[in-house]
Each structure stands twice: as structure tokens, then as C-alpha cells.
Amino acid sequence: MRTLYIECRMGAAGDMLTAALSELLSDKAAFFKELNEIMPDNVKVSTEIVSRKGVEGASVSVLVNGEEEHSHDVHHHQHEHEHSHEQTHKHIHDHHHEHHSIQDIEQIVSGMNISDKVKKDVMAVYNLIAGAESKVHGKPVEEIHFHEVGALDAVADICAVCMLIERLAPEKIICSPINVGHGHVHCAHGILPVPAPATALLLEGLPIYSCSVEGELCTPTGAALLRYFADEFSGMPIMRTQKIGVGMGKKEFERLNCVRVFSGETENDNEEICELKCSVDDITGEEMSYAISKLISSGALDAYCTPIVMKKGRPAFELTCLCKISDTESLLPVIFQNTTTLGVRRLHCERYTLNRRTEKVPTKFGAVAVKFSEGYGVKRSKAEFDDAVKAAESYGVSPSEVKREAEKHKG
Image (tube, rainbow, N blue to C red; front, side, top):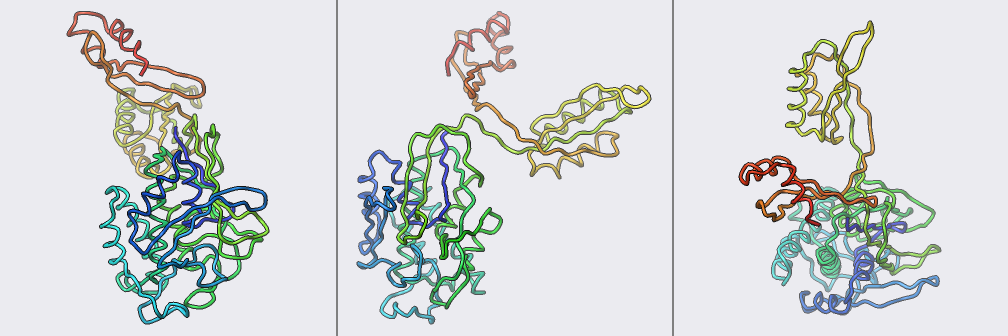
């Protein structure tokens, strides 16, 4: 499975994610040329290779009207551009600049020469930021305004990351727990704690932590991008790494300030599931069969029963239902309603599976569906029995002959 692992030991910002992901491309120069062509005329994005603490990595700069947002305030970390301002609440440096509303941003993005998917992704990320700012300031999203340089800077970062994700096309994105730093940050509204209120809202429910580094390590744009794109937050999976991208932050700390992205293949798609179990000694085989079919049709990953002997030598069944953790509450009533059990045990398990896909393959008996599975050094193929039976009846051969023919296909 094509997997991206994003390591955020020093937080994340839009420019850092852009820099790290762009390092995974085979033609980085062509990408930035295309990015600049779709940006408004007053926005220029550039990249360079820099060396920090003996490590080389990419650094991305966004100029809006010839200036960078982070230059407005030396206390800001990377791109502290995302904090919104009400139209009447001006930044100390922005008296000569315009402000943009979320509607202005949408108009800019809708006119860009990018795919509909990227446009949708860009606005979804920007709306996450605007929604967080709206909640922090107690104002409707429509009344939230962004400083011109910061707004267009964020648009460039978000567009770049959304385009890069589309181009790299990972099947899964895993992000490490996010380091948010500690201390305070200076912004238009005064001195705020780290993580800043909008960032804290965007990171709600995600695994975050603080370290000895003082400063804002995760910006709202970085938080919104990770929240939107990451499929899960965990440690690095077992993977065969093929490329590594290093994206440098603008500010230097005692620790190397970068985001690293690992691109590679993961053999397994392990996930946490629930195992629901109950033992019943006063139910018929037909009733148990019905309960199993109801569980499967209600969303269970699998359901089966095992013959057991209970106290006093009574023959009984043990029903086992495997399900996603999120489906536990909806499947418990199915068990209670369709069996005679008085209680259900729940166990948390980690499931490891082979990567699977099903496709129709051509054979001399017609097209037959074959399930292909792969992983852990194993490759298997198995014809779907119902398809084999239909083909066998049409051609007057046995299902096993159809299966042998179909399973010759390499997939």
C-alpha cells in the first residue's frame, strides 16, 4: 500500500509541508513553475535547498506583493499568517494592506486552473481555519477577515499541499503525534498562549504534546492540513521507505526545525477492531444461523459460532462477532435481539490483513471474478465460487475446472 508518513516532531506549517512533499517529486522545478502559473500575479512561490545543523532540506518562501508574512513579526514562527482580523482591527504593520473574507478566497480559488478535486480540498482546508477563527472570535464565518498577505500566503501553501497530495496519490496518510511547542505567541490580538486558540481548536481530538522548545511549532494552516488529509495519527508503521522529503522551517531552534515525510510501501493494513462474544445454551442452530446473517448484513466484518460445553455439561454455542470499533454500539442490539444471551463480552484486538482486491478476469469460460491478496511475502488468488458455478453451468464443465482456469491469471 502506497503510504505517506508525516513526522511532526517540530510541529508543522504550510510552507514546511509544501517543502517536504515537493522533495518526493521527480520534477520539482516543473511543479513550482505550474504552481506559480496558477497563483494570482502578486503571489510568487520559490524553493531552495538549505543546510541546517548539517542536514540539507527544502525551504519554501511565498512572496505577496514582494513581502513574506513571517517578516511582519519576528516573534512569529514560520507562517503565523493565519490569525484573522476583523475589518476594523488592523495589524500594526498592515495599515496599507487590504483584507480578504472567505468569499474572496473562494472566488480566487474557483478561478484557478486546477482540478475540481484540488479546489474542493483547498476550500475544505480553508473553511476549517475560518471555522476555528469564527469560534475563537465569536463571529460568523462571513465576518472573519484575513490580512491580505497572510490570506494569499495561506492560499499558496494550501493549494501547493493539495496539489502535491493529488500528484503523489498515496493510498494512506499517517501522521505522527504533533509537537505544538509551548510559551506564548504575539499576534494582532495581543499575546496568546501556545497552541494559539484557533490552532488548539483545529487539533481538538488529535494526539498532541509539548516539549522544551519555546515557540509556536504548529500553525493553524499546518493543523488544518494535517486534520484534513491524515487517515490516522500514530507512530511510524512498518514500511519500505522509497523516498524521504525534508521541509525546513524559517525559524531556528536548538533542535532541527523540520517536517519529514516518508514515502513507501506498507505490507499490512493493521487496524483496531472489536470482538464481541457471548455463550448461549438455549438456542437452535437455525436461530444462531439467522443471528449470524443479521450481524453480517448489519455491518459486521465477520460473525461465526463455535460449539462449546458449558457448566453442567450443557452443549452450547459461542457466538463471535468481529466489527469496527465505531460499529460496536449498533451491533450490540442485533446480538441481544436475535439471541437469548444475557450479556456480551467486548475485546479490543489489532487485525493484520493482506491487501485485497477483486477483479473480473477473462477466461475461455467467460469473465470470472477473482480475489487477489498480497502481503507478508505471500501472493494468492481465488476465484469467486458463485461466478465459477455460473460459468460451469453455461459451458457444461465443473466449477473446479473454471476456478483452475481463472486462477492462472496473475492479476
